[in-house]
Length: 215
Image 1 (cartoon, rainbow, N blue to C red):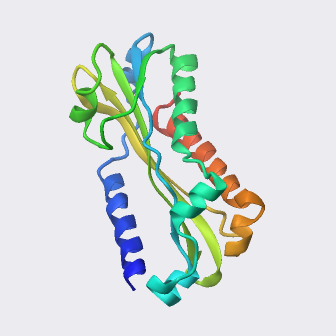
Image 2: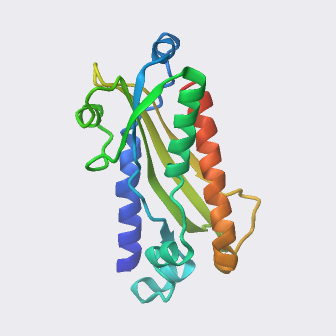
Image 3: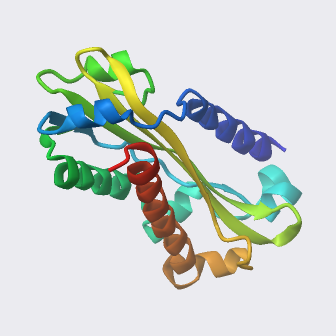
């Protein structure tokens, strides 16, 4: 039971970070203000995939399933936040003519706009995109089948006011019509898992740029 409780608690705690990010689409007047302004982009902190298997549920601490860290390292699973950040940055540069002047990782993961703004000098706006969590879990109503759940956050912070001008959390799940076992998900160097991660990156890029930033 210990392994189960740790997995569930960890997911709950990290998910809680996402609850601090409200859905705030870009205001049209503020969007016009972005043109030609300078932009700093935070480098995401890599977040490993979480894992909760049928074996974990049945055997708990005695489960023989590889840990999430072992799977992430063995199959070199990506963190979609890196691609999402790169894609959104590209859209801001191409469509709004923003000028990227800095790229650096925050000292620690935070959703606080004042803390984010305080780590960057001499820029007009800061784009912060991070993975909240990703989890491969078994489907409750299909005990032998697995799916990926992925969550990412976006915040665009105005340096001068230290206010968030646009923000959202993107949530993506594997297609419910897909029917894959644990072995299917990690077969061929985790081909299906990587496909789902890529799908998550593309989905969140579209959601962030179209629905939230409106670019």
